[in-house]
Amino acid sequence: MNNKSIYSESTIFAFRKTIFTPLLRPAFKKVIHSIFFNFFYKQHIAAFLPGRTPVTKVDHTLDEKIPFIPSWITIYIDFTQFWIRMISFFIRRHNRKAFVPIRDFIYSMADLYAFAAEVYTKNFSTTKRPFYIGRSRFLLLHTLDPHLMCIPSLHVMVVIHSYLQFIELTKIFKEEELLKEQIEVMRQGALAITAAILFVKQHSVNCIPAALYAMTSFTPDLFPPQEAQKFTEMLFSPAPKADIETRKNKVHPCAAPEIKIPESDQAEIKAHILKLYFQFLEEGKTAKHWRDPLLNFLKTYNIRK
Image (cartoon, rainbow, N blue to C red):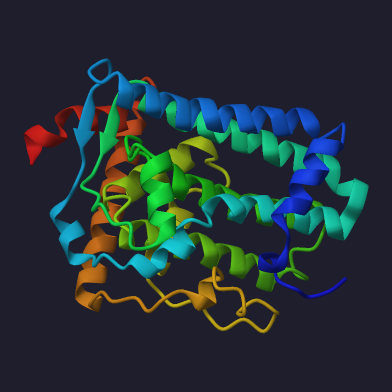
């Protein structure tokens, strides 16, 4: 087996395999339906028919300490391909033996979108997003995303779920030690995309702890508070140099643009993320439903500011 990075994998190969493999095709249909229904359809309906569901502005003063860096759009826009490449990676390595675990992974991604939508259907959220079309990817972003699903951040949830499931798949195939560098590449990719959503002003710092809390609620065994804290503490840290063939790919975390936030501001942002995450976690212990702490936050946020 070669030592090429997961970033060298083809998403086209993954689509071909999931569409034309009978065992994978139902999962492919479910995830496509879940993404379009729970993310695109519900947002666009809310945008065209405003007033049916409350919309809360969730900007925070700490957002002003994060510069708008358009070059990070390349990293940000990779969040979908980030998990699709996993399909190619494991099928190429294990062929038919990978079909069942990959099928389960695809189903879990469909469930993740529906899980986050449990908040959106009750209360949408948005932030101040600069209208910038100096790069073509921003035009695509403004066209496709009405920007009404900020809390919890699905982008953050998707990339965290992806690197966690990557680890689980390496365990299934007994390759955790063999692929430890790839695991770190996946974790760094998730961190880079999480930073990117802030640098392209797609989310507020408030959206990240909401996503971390949602992930602890969705997969508590895989994303306990210790992992959430570790992930937050690593945020904004440059990715370590990789020995595998990856850095030529401009979306790889090693190729991420320079992070331009003073260390004192980084510390303040991380402290806020962790404080809000643990607040949600504490409230969730006595809540009737996992989403209640997030909905309470949205309902009272503008009052408390």
